Image (cartoon, rainbow, N blue to C red; front, side):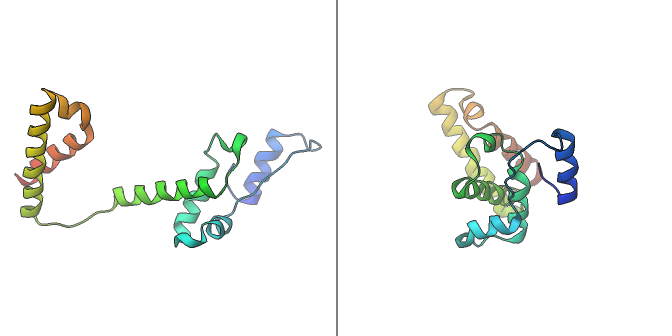
Length: 135
């Protein structure tokens, strides 16, 4: 579960009888930041990790510890890197696309027809998109 205290109380009352004994472990974004203190974690990263904790199926069996939080932080940062926009000149992008094309041709020669598509399907799609833009 993830939400405000009021939202969580409503969810708990829907799922459990008022007299039923339960254990509740609470994580806040501040707790996440404290555990990952040496990682220069931003408040936004801590918020995202805190929200993502509720989605972990293994939490119910193994709990959440520093190792889990570090892995989640790496995933958050990797997603941010993949989503960021960068600026390069069309000429630079064209040279990179040509170099990648040469690598793909070599992969096809060594691995047989279709080898590049089998090994690098997402990269080939990205290369095609770049080629359409700059070549």
